[in-house]
Image 1 (cartoon, rainbow, N blue to C red):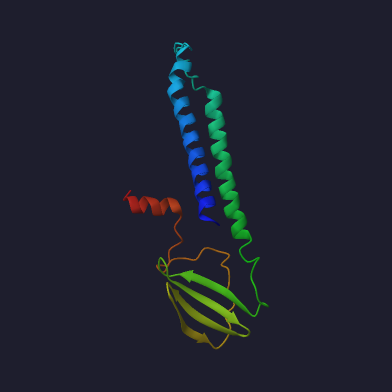
Image 2: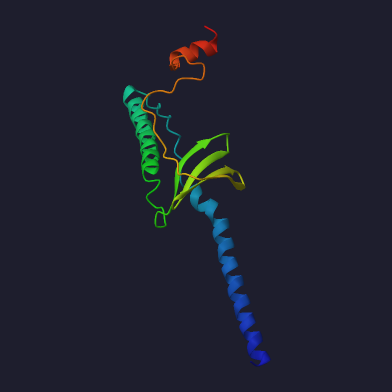
Length: 165
């Protein structure tokens, strides 16, 4: 591109930019004159806020109950479908597990015909024992008596004992 042509293009762009800037400046300076002819309306007195009635409280309460119900329903569905997405052919499954701490568990795992007792802690899994004979988990049909030999305590008696009553 020849030097003269390039200088003329730059001058044209600069002149257009200067013209646009001048038009914007004139509009900014003319705006107060144009809008001064308009009278500003006096502010209207504020309307009193609507009183909170029983209808709106009922609506809020029902909405809250609906949201809580949806949360509990989602938790129930999640718990019911917990094993739905398991992979594998069923050779490996958890027979039973018990919590022995806040984050520690003892798990009985069946692998084919063999059962393993495994300790699970955060960041660590270790084999505790390999069982010679498979153990069949039993669900107790009657409450288990405490070691003292007395009948199992109900919640009411445990609460009274813990409160010192």
